[in-house]
Each structure stands twice: as structure tokens, then as C-alpha cells.
Image 1: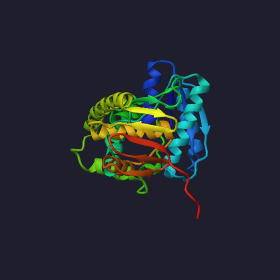
Image 2 (image 1 turned 90 degrees about the horizontal axis):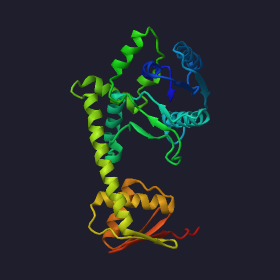
Image 3 (image 1 turned 135 degrees about the vertical axis):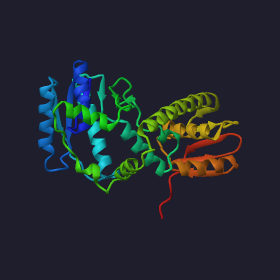
Image 4 (image 1 turned 45 degrees about the horizontal axis):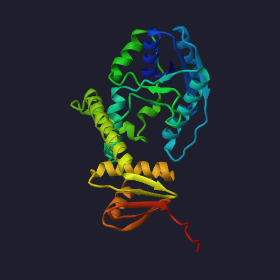
Length: 295
């Protein structure tokens, strides 16, 4: 197994625990966003070496983009981890996300009006690349642990972790969520993790129902896809349309746009959403929208 090692207290605790279990190797991704990041990566490697864990450093370039600086750094990190895992023949990459991370993530998504799938939070296990079915998995074994517990493990080992100042920057929503959790004692991260587990079960059940509806109610002929919503619950229909758009038109409409389209189709109307022209009635049909005329 591979360890994503940043050099912070969380990933160092994961490294210590993993090294005690059996063979492992670690990768530190240096984003180059801070002057001392290269030195911190070297220090993380020294800790790994002291525990007998082979270590490598991947240096990546990150710039502000559509996902923001932190989002782009996260994307680059997972690309680097995936490339490394495939080169090393690893079956899984472990990251040190914990219960406090889970609670922060759920609070942030609640504030943005996330639906059920978003509120499932950080998943304990998923494919690193959903398009690579035989590729390595991404595992988060510490979601039931509090950050303070992980810091205690590192302190007991006599290791001084790196501290990322961006974790306390007011530029990021996560800092506000972290401060809220720290200031409201009854917001228990462990209970957030428990809620995320229940929501994942519900999400999985809805996905199963969606698969059944698609098998029974969707057909394709040429460039036209037909879908009969029947009396299926609204959320199941919404999920079915998301899959229809993705699989048949390589399109990924946002939630509000999809809701407006569903209301129009249920009323028997027609509308264009992204690259798709849809018409309603008892059977909904979808086909590529004609190209727009230039003026």
C-alpha cells in the first residue's frame, strides 16, 4: 500500500500506524506553493526512512484555476499519486483524512445547498480514477479518528510535524468551518462521520433504484434517447437524467438547470440544456441540439 505523506501531523500519524502494520511506501507531493515546501518534503522523507518506509517526492506545478488554488493543488496531488501508484504496482493509496475533516466538509457542503450525494462527505473508499476500473483504490482509514488523537500519536513518537499556514487562512471556507466546530462544542465530528455513513447508505439505495429505472424506462435509437419517467420519485428521475446526459451526450448539467428541465418536460414542453434538446410528455426524448446560428 502507498501512503500520501504531506509531513503534517495527520499524515505522519498515518505513516506511523501503517508502518506498524506491514510493508508500505510513501509519496510526498511538493506543490511548490511555499518557500519551505521542498525542505518539508525532505524532512517527511527522513521520517519515513527512520521507520523503514521507502519514500519518493513528486514535484508538481500549480496555478490558480477554475477550482481555486486549493482545488487545483488537490487535483495535481491526486494525479501525481495515481501516476506513482501505477508505476509502483500499488493496489491502494491511503490518505489521512479524519473525523474533523469529514465534519468540515459536510458543513461546507451544507452551506452550499448540497444534495444527498454531496452530503455523504469524504468517502472511506473509492477508485482513484473512476474511469480506470482495474486501477488503484483511494482509502481513508482514519475517518473515525479525531485530529487530536492523531497529533498525540506523532507527539508520542517524538516527531515534530510540518505546519501549513494555509490551514488557518481566512481565504478558505474550510477555515471558517474549522473555527465553527472549535467554537461550538456540541458539533461533534464523530457524529458527523456517523451521519455521513447513514447518508452513504441512503445514497447507495437510491443509486440501485436509479439503475433499475434506467434498465426499464430508457431506450436509444440512433441519436435519440427516450425515457419514460412513470411514477418514479423525483430524485430517482433526476439521477437517471444525470446518467443519461453523461453517458449519451457527455454532458454534466448543474442541479438548478436539471430541475428546470424536469419541470418543463413534466408539463409537456421542450427545452435545450447544454448540448441536448429535450421534449416532454408521457415519454421524454433527448437528442443533440442543433448548432446555434452565428449572428
